Length: 196
Image (cartoon, rainbow, N blue to C red; front, side, top):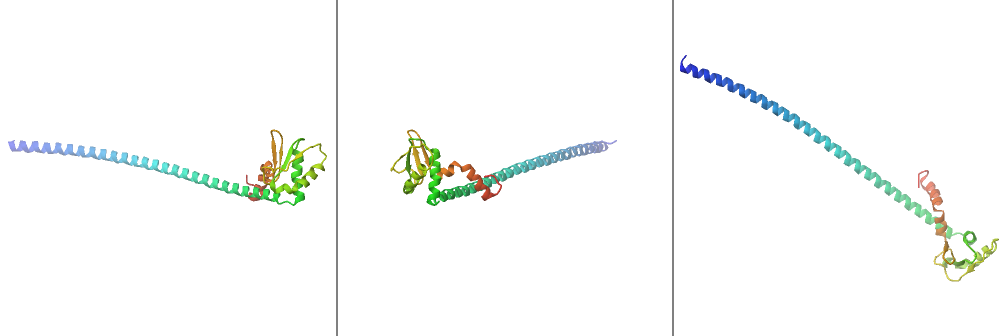
């Protein structure tokens, strides 16, 4: 074997060895690339899933907030309607004819008064003093009341005063005393069977 044959044989063996190394490196690179691609796909899937969950949670939060805001607005609107209706009841009491109005105030006055109380009338009802005195006198009570010409600190109705207490009997306080009942009736009339 000549030297050229030996060199060719070494070159061929080296080429075969180099091709085998390149093939192994290529296979390892392909395997790493496939593994990286799989890992990247899994990471992208995880990120997409997390982003979807976060978006769904944010959407749920926004929907819940919108529902709460709508409910609050509906409650405010219902409350405004009830307040308006309650004011209409107060106005209706104030607009009663004299006999009915005096009877209503007189009944509450007799029920709430104690002997020695001072009775003062609101400015708008000062002309009804005589009728109220007659109503109280017509009821079998042992009340001895002091009637004053000084106006009560209310526009309508009467105020019973004692040493440390006072009791306002006005269209507003008559409604407020039964507010829960009046609201329930009004809510049933305005909103049906829904809760007030």
